[in-house]
Image (cartoon, rainbow, N blue to C red; front, side, top):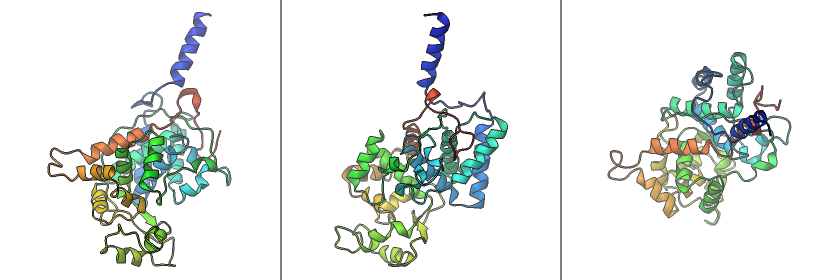
Length: 321
């Protein structure tokens, strides 16, 4: 085997197994992160709920086929983005705008998958959450199919189902709590509340008994039976525009809006994780919610990533090249 061929093979193996790294575009597209940040900032200024939308988009992308931008593809009714589990996911236009601007500066360099991860990071910071660095170098996937999203975590999942779905992605019970806490920003539709408020099983058709009795009338007023299922309400009562641990306090007190969030307080393990952020020694000596959240979302952002020759760089995020 020639030395040249050995070097080529070594290069191929190195790229195909390459790891994500901070500053991946420092030389090839040094303005990449600042361009994404500016687009995200403009989008949030024009519509406050965009921060939550971009965070949710990142989560939904990573949970199907890994963090590869597969949710962005729009090539007909069988595209992944039309899956039942992706209902209500928005923010696609923000990613496309960032991609279009990047293509004018450094064509074919920055992946849509990386834009999604960077946009989520910037959205968190702009919602007064922690600032952190995002390892980049993801490639865009070449598959998008509605059937692949069948196992998305669902608001009506039991705590056992939620744990299993997260474990399947290499995420722990602590990651489940912290990533669920991302619901601290944004709103949900009454569509996702009907069962919990009026037909909860096994409560015999009434409301979920985990709902604080003082909170139930408020929820039912916001989402009346047979009312507008598209009406929206904050997921983190009292703090829906600020990224903080307030939602964990709401979950502890029975003020969780989403059923899946409430289930975190039913389980001994996940409840103890929530409690750890409100201990007597916290915040001086206890765990840092912000630092732990960053660790979890960076970890999530590396699920099933495609690097090197395992993926490509789309010119338009909604379409394969």
